[in-house]
Amino acid sequence: MPIFWRVVYWTSQFLTWILLPFMQSYARSGGFSITGKIKTALIENAIYYGTYLLIFGAFLIYVAVNPRLHLEWNQLQTIGIAAANTWGLFLLVLLLGYGLVEIPRSYWNGAKRGYLLMKTYFKAAKLMTEKADAEENLEDVMEEVRKVNESIKYNHPLRKCVDTILKKCPIEYQEKMGRNMDDYEDFDEKRNTYPSEKSLVKLHKQVIYSVQRHHRTQVQWQILLEQAFYLEDVAKNETSATRQFVYTFQPPEPENRFIQYFYNPKVEWYWECLLRPWFYRILAVVLSIFSVIVVWSECTFFSTTPVLSLFAVFIQLAEKTYNYIYIEIACFLSIFFLSICVYSTVFRIRVFNYYYLASHHQTDAYSLLFSGMLFCRLTPPLCLNFLGLTHMDSSISHQNTQPTAYTSIMGSMKVLSFIADGFYIYYPMLVVILCIATYFSLGTRCLNLLGFQQFMGDNDMTSDLIDEGKELIKREKRKRQRQEEGENRRREWKERYGHNREDSTRNRNVHSDPKESNFSASNTTWSSKYTRANNRTERDRIELLQDAEPLDFNAETFNDDPLESESGRYQPGGRYLSMSSSIIFEDI
Image (cartoon, rainbow, N blue to C red; front, side, top):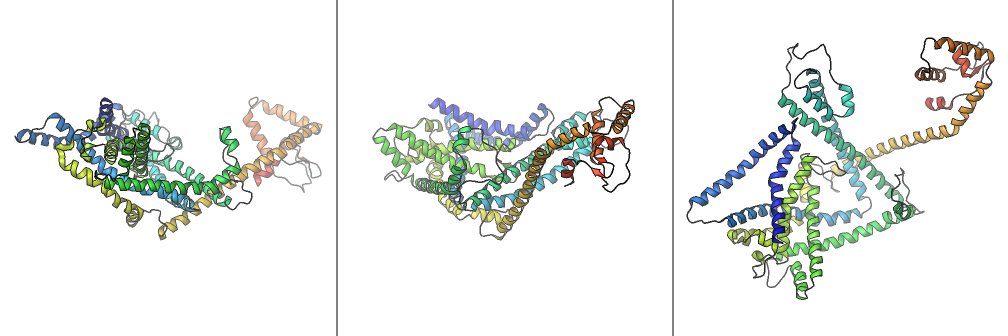
């Protein structure tokens, strides 16, 4: 176990401090080659970590010069571990204080009727603003790409870089711009100012970012529309007397036949309209009890006589009866709940568009790597905090017990007594203040005052955004309904008149006038000399002209036109035999 924990800990530290930051810079770089991206990543990380190395080097020089200090390698290793865990514990308590309150409250609010729908309207208004901003940003960047594409010709040395940028652009913009492949224009014939490779690298970086952001907002908008339509269907079906869940827009059938058979409209109505709200309420109460236990244990785990931490009480009771299975279950559930509270907060964090974890595979590489760094930095202090809650860490409980394999890797904190006896014990008590602040939504109110619109029920701005989002959803709903109605009408016309049109065409060909047929045949023979045989495009054009022929029911004269006679529509005397159903529909 010590070997296992040593491998896990040091590999995670290598990832979070060296490899993942390098990969972040590599993924965000706009270089056109692997060598260029590696060079950019090395320069960015050298500037960032140079300050840390400078501070650590100054500390080593001070220790070497001062004769009173004698630090061995193990002690230096413990100091480095303590510094990393201190930073992780500082962030851990902040995230934990938010998750302990927000997770139970989110389930409780989810059980309220109309709450999720109002919040979806609010998100729709904000997402539409972000979507419009992303489209505008993409247009500006594409305009820059167009200028560069026109200025750099086919034989310019940087043309390969421009081609690489064009490949990253959306297809519709590629078709508009195309390639400027004028053979008669050489890049050195005109004295134009050409962009440098450095500016192209910057433009490449902007293209990658703007295209990814535009695609993300488009996908999120479609997903949000589906959620809004579904929540509106739930609100309508709550008052249904038939107790059958009816959709406004029929969703695709599930691939699993088992789900399709058992999760029928009646079962879906009972779950969505009756059972799920109560299930969410019960789950919110259970999670609230767990949150109270965590908060109480965080404030009292330093007390060993008497034992006040509930986690320590449960473990010690199982220890007396040597019930190892119970210890495993209790430890697993405790760490599982702590991890959910901490890591779920990481998924909710958004630092403008710099760091943002988007659902449905829409997160960029930089944000994914940044979240991986946070997880690697939060996991060791989370485990250490759990051992403190259960009194398994001797440096915190001050008991002469056999240390666990994990605490043996962490080393003895007696080297830094002010951290072991001060920060590790009293700082977790701050979780109480953070829980109170989260309960009263102080952070949300502060962001709202700064101009970042947040969902608050007692705010005029929130009400305005909800109304705006509701109108947006209505507009999209009407648009989709018109599309479905158009498809249904086309399908009905095709099924009703498709066979009749074929039969009437066949009858017209059989009962046509012999003179007209001979004239049409001779005209066809004459025109075939000057056209390709079996020219489908020409036949389609002629058929289109036939369908588009204006009709005069009061005409007394007969125009001996081969197209008109061949169509069989108009006969002498103003008698009209048949009319194409597709022409009627297209006119409508």
